[in-house]
Structure formats: structure tokens, C-alpha cells
Image (tube, rainbow, N blue to C red; front, side, top):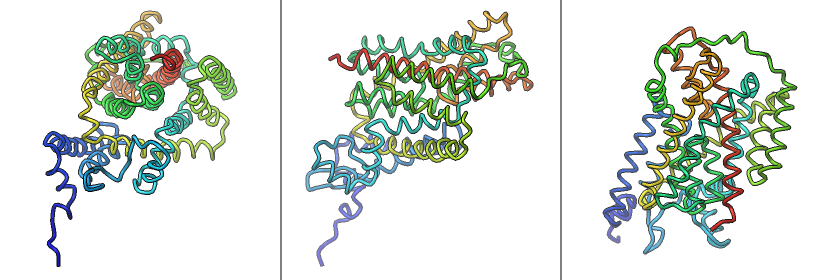
Length: 404
């Protein structure tokens, strides 16, 4: 009987010992990080819908490195750089997540599916209650999306890469995925990972920003929910159809996102129960599950060791911080415009992580005044932020797509 080499039997350990020490250390660190993200997701400190599949995927993929051949190490999860029909057909038959990645992730379809689900759970009537106020907040909440672009260029990224990482400031994961896929395909995996890693942190970090910049007596301002005008389903559908058509006319390159979001809105307002349940349940949460899982398994040691990743991490943090500050400034602007009757905390909801930032706003207001309810206005600002982010993505892609 031939001798048994245990390092070939337990190849995850064997490849770690045989690989470069830096790679081995990175794998161990990412396994620990994945377990940490999973734990924080289970506890609810970070967004569990993304962090649980992402964390477990990250821990698994960095443990499951094996010998693909005598000279090559890798995994059988997914190959994000498979090129040519022959190579692609090979990995489609071997890598178990490759079909989902190839047919939904690498072409942006998964972003559109998530957008359909978001549209189906978004009541744009909240935005139509006070459209001017919502748009002021939403525009100000794009501060990070706009200012991070020149900062990124100054730090050495080209225009396309800078625009892609700047979109993190919109706090809209599908938008970042879609933009980076078109403008910076070589960096779209790390940019998307950075985006979703940080978007989960908005739930944990933005409350501290609100408390820092808005005093308690302003956080506790009550707003009269009963005084809000009623917006009919017909008015919402009319608005959705007109705006969707207009935006597709102006920015055709982002039309799949506009169509997906407003299709969800129209389905919701049309009262087609079967479609609403399908989009808001199966489509949204199924897409989110596989999105998180794919992000985790794409977060291999080789990805994190890309010298641009540290820069992307810094720029992503800057983008979200500036957008949060901008949203709060927008909340203060509307507060002064309204004769100081508007709760400025609503400004943080202009950062369009639906519905996370709206929930953050309501939670902070409730902590300051348990009788205060601002969620309708916060959701209005949040939905406005989605539309504004999509417009900025359309502008970036239209202007930069054909540049070098």
C-alpha cells in the first residue's frame, strides 16, 4: 500500500503550508474576519442579510484552497476571471457557484433583481408627500459620491475607477456593482466587496454620526403624521411611469436599473399580490442571499493583497462619511426652511441604503423622544436617494464609458 501524504489528504492545510507566507497569513486573517462578520451579523450588529452568507463564504473559500494541478492552487467555488469559451465551459462544470456568478453577477442581472425587490417594498408616496424636501436631502446626501471622485483621482485612480468607488457614497450596493462592472471591470470585485462591507457598517456607524452632529432636543422633534397628505395609488403609478421613461430617455446606459426599480414600484401600487410577494420575497431575498455568498467567496487572499484594495477601503469610508454628513446638512437645510418644525435626523435617510438608513433615523429619534414618529418622511428621503444615486450613476457611466 502506498504511503499516505496527509498534506495531500487535507489539502486546505497543505496549500497553506506550501504557499507564500504572506498568502498564508492573509488566508488565516480572512478566515478570522469572515467568522467575525458572521458573528456580528447573527448578533444584529451588522446587516445579517448580507453579513451571514458573506462571512461564512469568506471563511470557507479561504480554507478550501486545493491543488488544481501539479503547479496551480485555487478553489472550486468560482473563477471571476475565466475568459474564452473553452475555459468558461470548464469552470461552469466544476466550480459550483460559477453558473450563478456568470449568469447573474458578472452581467449585473443580480443588481437588477435586487432593485426589483427594493421597488416592491418601497412606498414612493412618502416621497410625494414632500418631494422638494426629499430631493434637497437626497442631493445633499450625494456629497460623498461627488467629492470622493476628485479625491480618488488625486490619490492615483483613473477617472473610471474613481467614479466606481465614489458610488459607494450613494450607499446603494446594486448601483456600485452595476457602475463598477461597466467602468472598472478589473476592480469591480474588490469595489463591490468594499461597498457591501461598508454598507453593512452604516447600520452600526451612522447612529454615532447622528448623535455627534444633531443635539438631543432637535433629534426629538415630533412631526404630525396625520397632517401628511394622502397620495393615491394612481398618482404613484403615474409618477413612476413618467420618471422611469424620462430617466431611461436621458440615461439609457442605466435604463436596466431604472426599469427594475420602477417595475417593482408599479407592481406594488397595482396591487398584484402574487407579483408583490414574489419580488419582495423570493426575488429580493434570494438575490441578496446569493449576492452575499458570492461576495464572500470572491474575497480570497489574492483579492485583498491587490495594492489598490487598501486605497479602495479608505476611499469607501470617506465616501460614506461625507454622504452621511451631507445628508445631515440637508436635514438642517429643510429644518430651517420649514420654520424649525422638521426633524433634521431625517437627513441621514437621504443616504439611500433602503430601508436601513430610514430605520436608523427612526431609531435615533425614538431614543430622544419615544413619542416622535418620522419614518414616513425618512422613507421618502431614502427612496429619493435611490433615484438620485441612479441618476449620478447614469451621468458617470455616460460621460466616462468611452474615455481612456
